[in-house]
Length: 149
Image 1 (cartoon, rainbow, N blue to C red):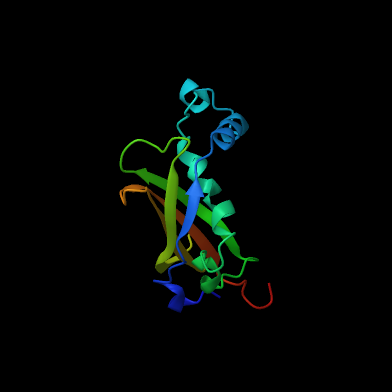
Image 2: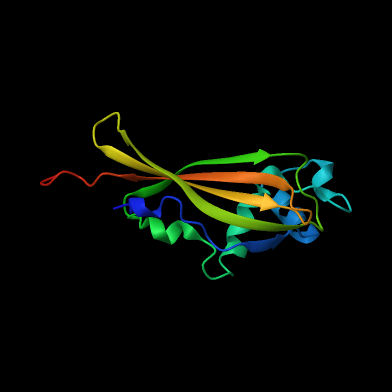
C-alpha cells in the first residue's frame, strides 16, 4: 500500500552527463534516424532523459521512489512526460538532477476499485543553474482484489 507520507520526499541531487556515444546508441535503439542525433555534437532525443535512472541509482538517497512503498504486484507505470524549457541538451552537457515525489492521489477505476497514483518529477538543471527540462513519471497501484476472488 502506498505511503502517503512520501508526498514531498526529495532525493539527493545527482549529476548526469550527456555522452556522445550514449546518444548515438540510444537513438539507434529507438530506431531514430534524425541526423541531429548522429552529429559530432549530437542533440539528445527527448526520451533520452529516461536514462537518468542509471545515474540516479549510483547516488545513495537520490531516488525517493522507495519512500512510496508501492506494492509492485499491483503497481504499474502509467505515464511519462517530458517538458523542455529550450532546446534538448547536447552531448558534452552536464546536468544536475533532482527527483521529488510531487503528488499522491486516488481515482475510482472504471470497473470499480480504487487506484492510487504517484507522480515523481525530476528536474534537469545545467551548469549555469538554468532549468533545462522536467520529467514527470506517474505510477499507479490498483486496489487489492476483494476477498474470495
